[in-house]
Length: 564
Image 1 (tube, rainbow, N blue to C red):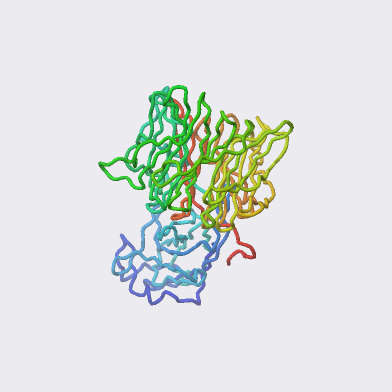
Image 2 (cartoon, rainbow, N blue to C red; image 1 turned 90 degrees about the horizontal axis):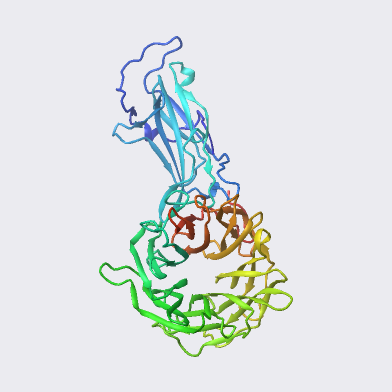
């Protein structure tokens, strides 16, 4: 932003005419004479006219703030001696700060300045988030100008240029530096925390993170987080047994006012089951975080069941649907649940062959229908398959194959856009350093119509483990995954528009671990933010880390132009 000074404007003359004094300097009746014509005290003036002037680039991978993001502009007046700034005060003792919430480029005049001083006019631009103002301009010399007022009358009504630059932050961490540990204490050697999953509760604007925990035989734990990532209370036990509980997934149901967690469970010797547990929406001191007890949802012999997925249903009578791979039958099992979290009606199995796996499930809140996506392999090719499921899970739509090729497919993830009645499906294709993360849009209802398949991990080495979230404020998707960056593996992300097109380039989210993996991500519509969590290499063993992401910029809608 450029600010230009003009002698013709006196916008703030009335405001500042009440005798400004500078902190630490007495109001003088006389000033020493100089070699040029001497002015009386408090007769200098300076006028500024804001003009936006580029951005302070912090990353080439994300979009900067633009002038239309600004919702408030402050111009503050200081005196400067050496490196010390001192706020200029009015006669009433208030700081001289001019605030505007519109008309940012209109001229502003500071009158009644004193010769013999060096003044600094500093501009700060703000945007609004959660009804609060957040600064989005730099604080260095690119955002202020210094003006020297001498006894020469030519210096008493000055014009100058003031650069004010908006910062470049499309997505950035909001707590704990670039990333932060999720747990109060680090995991101990031999007791890793792994495989996190996350869901957001809009009513309280909170998150629930669940994970595998190896402090005993292998349990499922949970931790509530405030919207800014601050822990709420202590981590709590969700499931334990004589053998491992693992592969957790979680969703939130506004209809049932609770979270629902599912996992693979080996508590019965020789039997692998899928279990579920309701978790209360809000933590109440002195009461359990759990609602009811662990519930068996299905299972099989010889370690058969694996990779559970869960989605919240639209109906209050069928608030949850769970899918998993049944290795004994070769099918993907789909089970609706009632309000108590128990199986509701018969289990659906399809199709029944061993070459399908990695189920992912999401519901379109607008239509109530689900998309079940999974990998499929035959003798010559592999594909990712999507099937639309009716809101009451009564019937399954036509099989629709995406990305059919000889390359292997794994790690399916899916998110729904109720605004466009589409689902975005993401997966890993290929193996090793030649793998890539791909994504495809499927249209909800009737015969599926897919959009183009997009490669979202451009330039990434050995990417894998994708996760997807939908931003209903901007209508865009966010995909996270892991990829090798030099030696270490890092968590990366890519924004996609409502049509599946990349927004900017992909960018790294994690920087400190040696092997970060298994990311999960949830969107927060209250704050227009997302929270990404992942399994990181801790000081002793695998641990959990996370990063809060803030959508500072939004993609343009069809036919929209950049606001002035």
